[in-house]
Figure 1 (cartoon, protein in one colour):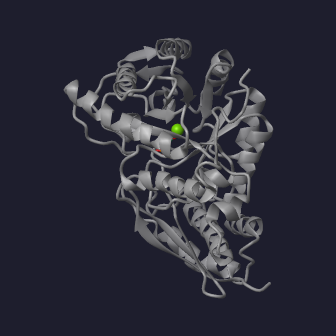
Figure 2 (cartoon, rainbow, N blue to C red):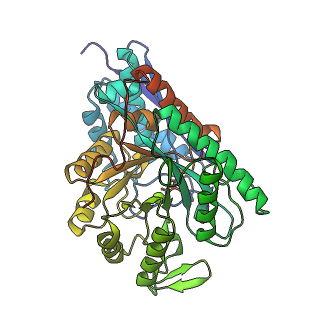
Length: 428
Ligand SMILES: O=C(O)[C@@H](CO)OP(=O)(O)O
Ligand SMILES: [Mg+2]
């Protein structure tokens, strides 16, 4: 082996919500550096790998010095001399060192930082872009989903559903699609202002007007698409992440949704009504709570042939949980978040399982983000076809899209393939 890992080290930096998070460096024996920053979620699934926080409370600005220390001591010790091109071996060594099922001892934030930084160091050593190092050839640019109205745990307003997204359908290039999204975003601001609401932003850069209903948010999106000069469903479509665990009542099994109590069936009727009112809705994420697998599966079976149903909080990018969901037929799409599982290798395994079983994959940022664009390269490298990374505003979100613009340029604007929704999968 000509080059090996000389040193691994980490430090505490801050994320887009002003909370401490981990940055990891992997330094190779020839001095090559790979660096990665770890994002952090708010609406986290119960079964996510553990983000190690000093004092344990993830949203109170608590530090990550324990996770940083684990990188600088134990992880540094076992990875010294390791082959940076053997990603699977490196990830497995950290999993074994941790010794728990959910990375609770060393912290998924510690392990993921090193896992991603290793990919970067290897790519830098070979002097190839990250997406090439991880993905090789035959790559496509994803369809992007932009959260432009924020609710739920991402905003302080009366909307219970978490994310209202717009996505470009008909587009001649990635750039063309992104320009259409930016135009719609600017028009949406005017629509919200005209209706007399504030246009302050939520965690993911979308507007957070104090509306009282999700339906009202969808109406505004519909109006903004039209006023921007596009046809809803043709050039620009709509998707939402209900993140329903947030309004699920575990005791009664009902949903406390925007001033009403709905049974699971009533919740389903509500979504069906939204689908008929807004036929431009093409994707629904987490319509049911994370403990409500049966109703989730029932709903997916009912409408899954007409709309993409994405599962996030229930399955947490965990290959084992993916298998359970597939057996139950509980959705037709998986959300993919690196830090829910904690290593690059396990994330690749989750994507492979999804693909083999005809599920689409939507790659995702976290609501607490950094300037790191790893997720953009990773989406292209894995041909994940879909990426949600927030609004076309605020640099921790936009940098991911800017990276995709650069990748499109590198691949050759006319020669690059654009992902087709829904990832060439037939929902029937
Ligand atoms: O629920 C989600 O899909 C994510 C990302 O948008 O939010 P968070 O990072 O807060 O879990
Ligand atoms: Mg979600």
